Amino acid sequence: GRYADAFGPKSIVVVGLCGCFLSGLSYLLAAATGHWPLVSLALLCLGRVILGIGQSLAGTGSTLWGVGVVGAPHIGRVLSWNGIVTYGAMALGAPLGVAFYALGGLYGLSITIMAVALLAILFALPRPKVKASKGKPLPFRAVLGRVWPYGMALALATTGFGVIAFVGARLLFPNGINRLGGLNVAMICFAIEIVGLLLTGIAMVPWVAKVGVFLAGAGFSLVFPALGVEAVKQVEEQNQGTALGTYSAFLDLALGLTGPLAGWVAGFYDLATLYLLAAIVVV
Image 1 (cartoon, rainbow, N blue to C red):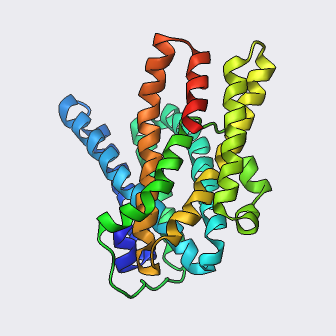
Image 2 (cartoon, rainbow, N blue to C red):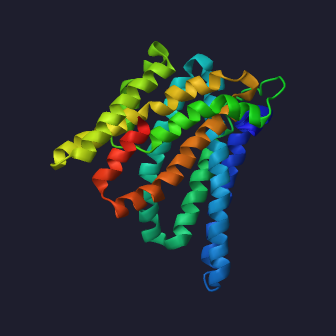
């Protein structure tokens, strides 16, 4: 986020996509050194690290780039569409990756990754730049101090994350944040998510659980853009990238922590208790 503020989001997106390309190259080298298992494993791990850095730069940079192109009043819609394409890519990428791996092994998969990254770079390069904002940047601690309440609310809501109705709700209500305000939309979404989690937790028949998961996903869908709008408002324009990056990190941390914690709760108690506890966290 800080690099996007300093050098402009387009540059950061291109650098991030180059990282994605290099991750594919690392996988290709891993496939070529399969007869040296430790070297191959090290290259695979290196590729994952490079991909993580590249995707982080491209993801935050593209969001700030979109905001710069359409203007700050539309930041809620930019965040919504960013989430739609991100999770859409995950939904497509997983089965396609399995298919390419089945067809061509690690060689085929790595070449596909490199080709997709190169295509993305070619799409990005002709697009107009957005100038980096002038002004003295805030220290990271100051940005974190302004953004963390919204990030913490996002992190707690993430415990009930469901993707079934996630994209649908964002497509149906693209202007809701501009009309009602970020905090109002977030409160409505929290309520819907809580009802969904409670229904899932107490469900005695499958259809009730399905309705509950649907509501949990629909409720959570607009939390990220709604609170993101408010988080970015807390800083000046020259610090928006840092604010977005910091805010997004709360989502990533929550997803990383929720998986193992949820698994522990489900193993120690049961799935019903897991969803009821998630509802309490969102409350």
